[in-house]
Image (cartoon, each protein chain N blue to C red):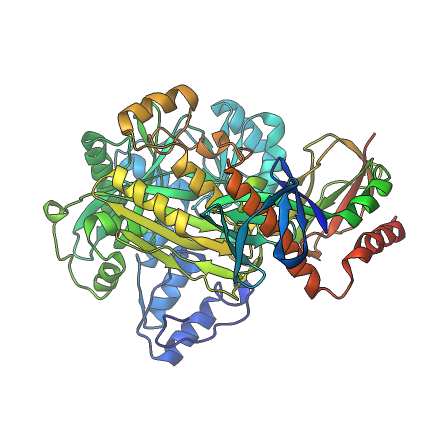
Length: 164
Length: 471
């Protein structure tokens, strides 16, 4: 199976073959791989050098690579093909999602409002702090999916903006 | 709870029903047979009504008495007290009635200004307002936060000091009138007015300024008839002028760095003072040696504007070794709650001098691993690692000053540190680390996929269908 991996702004192609063989950017790599914590941490020795990689979060994928914080994505070849077909169909709609679970203290906009980028859209109280959620880009408020006073989960879509 | 001899439930997770429920806490203390309550450094620790209720229940409150808390807890009253004690304060107002009054006051003082809650300190509900059209949003947010944190919405305005360092002075006072100062802490590295790195001695504080700040803190403590441990906070401007900010009438989160350089156990001293004992030493007996740094590891993502995160801790590895202390409540399986502060652990490093403390802190941060939530570790590492300082601090200072306006390692920083810190700087990985990371990324994704019931091939289509249905 082939994968396209991004590590921050670097792209790397990885292919997993049979019997634990694999290639990185089409070059066969000799590595010894040890899973030190199941599904969470690997010790990987390459060319006599040992590296420790810890999964900080799975979704989105965030890695600790020898003490460095790295944002990663992994797409397999099937998903790559599927994504190419779907690309471009969802442009123009930007979702404001709750970055963390909390209490929605206020919604400052209503459907049909025009907002500029960074305009305060809602106030979310979490961890004893009030966080102003700002418009990720300019546009018209297409949908308000949450009401003030509601408890919201992380990732919940609160407001949809149609870009103009 | 793992370290406790005995533990008693005080109610559900919501703070109002547990940690802010004074009656419940006192009732539990009585039932447990305790004779004193130490309020820690959050929630009711600076609540005068709580201190009074504890005393009226016949228990000892470990901290200053209610009258002192009341006097210093109202922040504009504390500013008046500082003026009487001949300690400089920044230009500011009394509590304001509404946003219109705030607009007038801010125009008089001149932007930028700080909106601050009169009911309590610690940075909660505090907002920097750079220009007039930011005032209304800031007022709304600060009022709400002040109400949540201190139970009262009152706000006042203070002039913002540029290029300022946040320097605080630790004091101890017994109930026979002895007051001593133990030394300063530089707490300038803050985000949203919450501290992320603290150190002592302050790299910008010379002996002269230290003596002045110590004397000013003692004058304020005497004027307030202070008792127990406390912290007097100052802003020190680029011109070395200092201004009184507030008194924290409790133990501070960052107290361990003072313990490291003085060899004193502040909590033990708090208990002795609360028990009526006089201070066992005088000002001349206080000896500071070496340097100490604290990094507050929080459940916040430094690469997403320090947004708080919640989740379940999957893996923890805490650092150890000479000069390294970790005060933490972390364990694998722990749920990071959304109800409280995002503080996960305090990593403290001590050295004979600042260079050794930094070297030990670097090692500690490299050793530490937390999996399950994004943490501030990435920020702390980059702040302490920016540059190889093996070549020595002098040449380092030279190189750094040319490249960066703000830098922790050289000690050139003020309260604008995090604004200058560039979260976009991606770490440079070696070719080997890149290959290993790419492979681990694939293995992690596959390991996760195997635990899901949906076959991975269906997932994009299922997602697309759901999105269509929502449209």
